[in-house]
Image 1: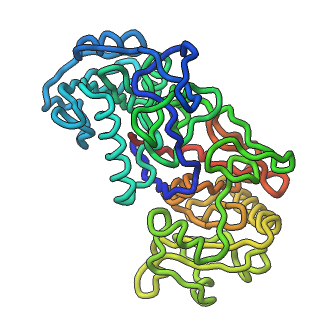
Image 2: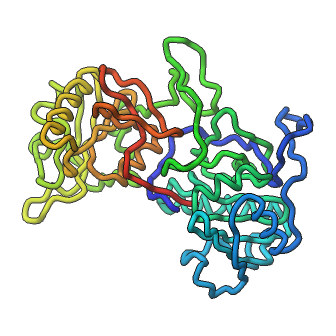
Image 3: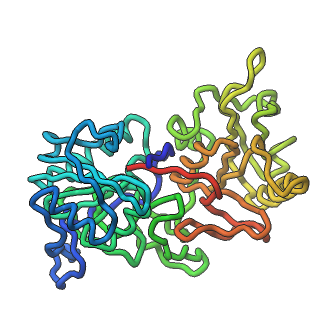
Length: 395
């Protein structure tokens, strides 16, 4: 499943940590840098052998190598003749109601490099979240790409390893990580997914008051798991435009900021300075002769507590009628000293990849395992990247 999330990146850059052939337990050997090296694991000399291996952990029925098989994805991932792939087949996972595509290759490094090149090309083309939720699992001489997250989770318990090459991805503590054949990629037994069906993330955000730096490369020393920040509206615009928020039409004019549309209702109303916001801008087409479209608001915050207090009051007022937020009402996604107001789930998903979190003040709210859930600046609210009913995904 492929996420449109943006995803432009300020999260932790991946260290090259994991290898091509999977291993169950390491024998203690390390490379020159002290990272564990992988021992031989899942291997197959034919697609039939690969199918036999997969079936130890998941359903894989009716294997076919027909290139016209209707079960193959419409968007081609790779095929014989590319990445040293010699064979491709597909089988059905009847238990999880999905498909599994199997690939045989002759050069493990060429396969990893091919996937890395594909990920980087997708990111360069604007799909910056491509590969964050990878379902590419590799073994010795073969790889599989299940369509179901649950299937990927089952296979991650084997000697297969999840290949991830998106530079903003990371593997939480508690999961296996080994040295990769391709710089910038990682192989692990962690299945990242925002549909709630992947591997749980038990990593605990650090308390900034406790001191100490985050051990994750690229994460801020302030603690937590990191929140986005910017020094000005110009920096904020540069952070989110164009892949997350379309700011082709951008304005800080007070008359433009005062615009409200029946389809796009901001969190902040009236004088934004009374909300603790120093500078504010609007992105999108405010309408006029035509209907407004793609409206989002950018905020540079000088008093985050005041902003969250007023946003909490507005959110609770909206919940009074039917205990639900209006679909046209914007959600407030905050960073350390910045915020974005948007009612577009795709935009929000991209902002989560940039380390913004949604201010949720709904009574009784809980997040699924694997999602971030952190303290807000006001009591009765949390900061999270989990939205019930909103699903996204991708290779």
